[in-house]
Image (cartoon, rainbow, N blue to C red; front, top):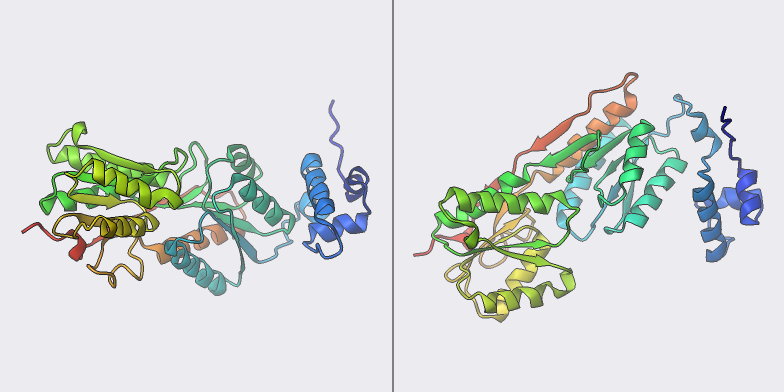
Length: 340
C-alpha cells in the first residue's frame, strides 16, 4: 500500500533553505525582497516537490476566482490582438477577468505560465500552444482542469479546440493565383514541424495544384528558419527561381518580408509576381498595391474560445469535448490581379 505524502509550504522552505514567508511571497508574485537566485531556487523546489497551495490542493469547487488565463505564442502578430479582443469582451459580459501571458514560442515559458496560473487558482485557461509540452497538456486533461486549445491542434489530446480550416485557406490562396494565370507558385512558411496551422496551409496549397492538373514537380516551397533572415532567404530563392510568378505567404509577418524582398529585386506586383497573404490585417488594404489575403474570423475565434471555456468552468457535469472549426474567406485585391 502506497501512502501519498502531502507536501507543505514548510517542506518547500526547508529544502530551499528559506523561510515560509519567503516561499509565500514568491508564490504570490511578490519578488521585491528577494534576489533572482532565491526566486529561482524556490520555484525550482516548488516544481521538484510538485507543491500546490492548500486551497488548490483541496480542490474546493466553491472557490472560484472568476479569472481566466490566456497563454499566447506570439504578440507580434496583429491577428492575436483581434483574438484577444474577442476573449476580453466575452469575459466582461460573463463577469470574468483576464490574465494574459506570452510564451513567445518557448515551451519552458509556456510551462511556467500554466503552472503559475494554477497556483494563482485561475479558473481555466485558453492556450495557443507551442505543442512541445505534451506531458503537461495531458496532465491538465487528466486533472480535469478547464482548458481550450486555440488556433493549433495538439495531436491525440482530448480537449476543447477552436481552429480555422487551414487546409481550405491554403487551397483558396493557391487556386486563386492559378485562376488568375499564375503558373509557378511559391509557398512561403515557417519551418516548424510542431505547428499544425502552417502544415495544413501548405497541404491546401499542394491540393490546389494537384486538382488543377499539376504534379509534385510544380511544388515550390520555401521554409523560413527565422524571421530575422526571412528577407535574405526570400531574395535568394527568387533569384535562383526566376520563373516564380505567384507567391502564397502563410503568415502576415512573412508577407511583409516578402514585399520588402520583391522591392529590393525590383519585381513588380502584380504584373510580374502575384501575392496572396494570410490574415486580413489592418494594413492589408492600405499598402500598394492592396494585398489579397485569406481572412480568419479572429474576433469570433476569441469570443467562441472564451465562451467554451467559461461554459466548461460553470458546468457541474462532464461536458462533451468540442472541436469548433471556423471557415476562412478570400479577400481579393490588386496584389493577385489577373495577368493581362
